[in-house]
Length: 224
Image 1 (cartoon, rainbow, N blue to C red):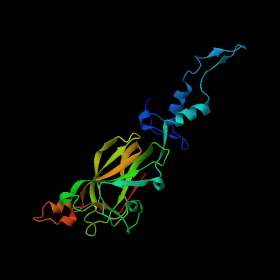
Image 2 (image 1 turned 30 degrees about the vertical axis):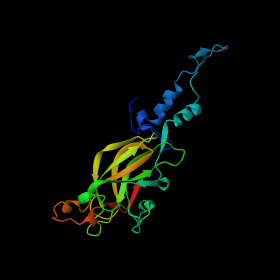
Image 3 (image 1 turned 90 degrees about the horizontal axis):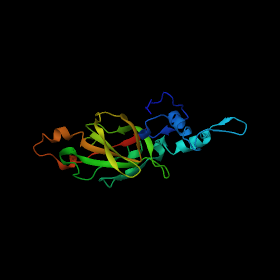
Image 4 (image 1 turned 180 degrees about the vertical axis):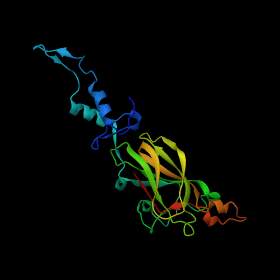
């Protein structure tokens, strides 16, 4: 089956697992064509009876191969590679200026490293959720020298096997939420892995860089 995107997808149709490479109507058609009774047969009246699955049953089978879109209110900040004890980890899911995630002291040598926050995308009982973009908001320079500049995205499946997505992203030095498309990804958990902070290009040229700049953070993250 070829993945035809959303061409045949109705708004109310479930989202099929990316690994299936098809739309929900295509998946439903294949499931209904599964031979569950040895093929069609002739009834006593001479009519040909098909063993094709009923639509309701086929939809139920297909539901086990479907996911739903991530719901921001159900996302949980699960853990971090390190953090400042002043702020609660959950604060980075609130889009305001009163709390944010900040990595631990001297965790980013010369403003570079791999500090991360891990988020649980799915509520209990859901193995995977569909995610298409990450939004990040920072305090820009000069107020936010520790704000994340470059980051990558790691995702985990239901077996908690992690993989890195292929791109690195750069956060502009400006206010407001910034959107970063990551493609169509089905995942149980996600990590925002910070690779540098906003002041890192200047730290590398300093003769005696100050250690309090060797951290990274952000105001808020949200997912769609």
